[in-house]
Image 1 (cartoon, rainbow, N blue to C red):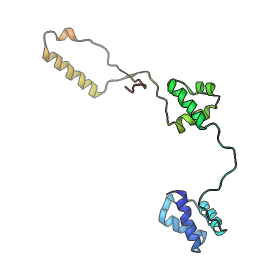
Image 2 (cartoon, rainbow, N blue to C red; image 1 turned 90 degrees about the vertical axis):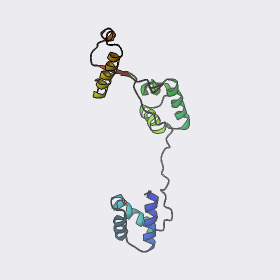
Image 3 (cartoon, one colour; image 1 turned 90 degrees about the horizontal axis):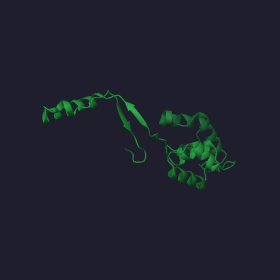
Image 4 (cartoon, rainbow, N blue to C red; image 1 turned 45 degrees about the vertical axis):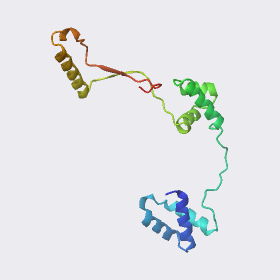
Length: 168
């Protein structure tokens, strides 16, 4: 449930004349572990008893975040799209924003993650070995006389390559 829905129920129970303890017992009985904490319930009961009408949080003082402005988000997005291999430190130097702000923009606002493109050695699985035996059997059945001349031997290492641009 949304916190404003819990607050609406607390307000309703306060208007019925129930105490903070009764409100807490009722919410715990209905919602169990997902109910608000005892301190939260007591705070909102006091607020509603004083005559508060709004269920929303009050506006807070403080500086608004300027690093995650739409202009900065667009700038970081354009730089990343131009060079997908760019690092956070390079973005930090280019934009003048802090490392943490750039990290927040890329992961929190743009929902991007870094995928590294490199060669990765893998050991063959049982399915890969079975596939190799099946293909070899088909080659042998096709022409048993020339079978030995068409085999290239190697070790048991399979190497895969992932290209993030084409996702292949």
